[in-house]
Picture 1 (cartoon, helix red, strand yellow):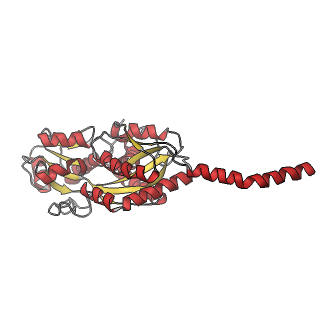
Picture 2 (cartoon, rainbow, N blue to C red; picture 1 turned 180 degrees about the vertical axis):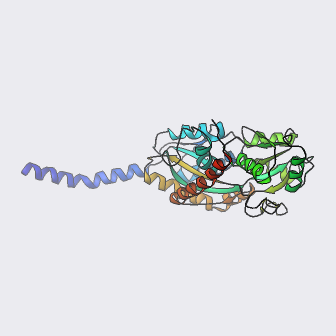
Picture 3 (cartoon, rainbow, N blue to C red; picture 1 turned 90 degrees about the vertical axis):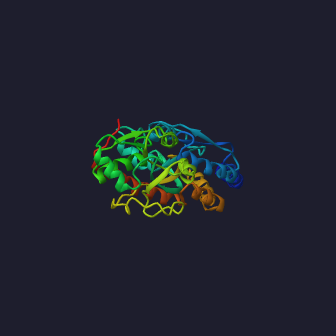
Length: 326
């Protein structure tokens, strides 16, 4: 009995020290640089948002956040890689509507499940898909585009980002909603699509604003319509697709951050605090707006609910159009 009392007394004596040691260890996170996997090529819309976030997140966490671009298969390759990373708080993955709400249904075997393999950190921003064209393209409106496509079925090339992205799905939705036969030309990323639009190699395309912003503002490209619910504040004279005669036509991307499943909740909470602070900061809000987006800070729970809503919406469209990528 005396031995038991001595052990208990020693345990009680050591408990505060062990608690302090545990707290100190927790306070040390992060103790080394973090990696942010961006599952798209450098220079595109997802990469632009990621770099805005990484700069500020590095300052907030006190450690570098290193961008690792792992493009391919519309984000499938990089996101699959992130799903297999250790859940130790040192791997982030840049996510958006395509990787968490489209690919799991569109691809026969994406190799990851956004709910099972990841824990949401929070949303960052939202941006509409835009129908844009080379200045020489003869149609000035969606109505003109539809008339041109009907005049020459199958001959008009329409550029998009790769299958599994909101831009690609917007093109498929356009074909179905307008009842036209156009040839969709998928590119490896939004930067490559922008370059070919500028060169006139593809006359028209559904693209995000970030990689094309300077050219749209400078006249190198022309916006025909936005696929958001309202007009863009940066292009107030450009109508929405719904205003242009396509009722219910909406294609908007949501960007966010994920970590591998089983990442400790205290780390998730810490990174979310830093993410919300930076998204709410005036300079980041200004940078997001300059790329045509709107800030969308959230809790992990709100991002999880957003993934559910977006997946329900896009998967219904994919099944309706009977789309599948092997």
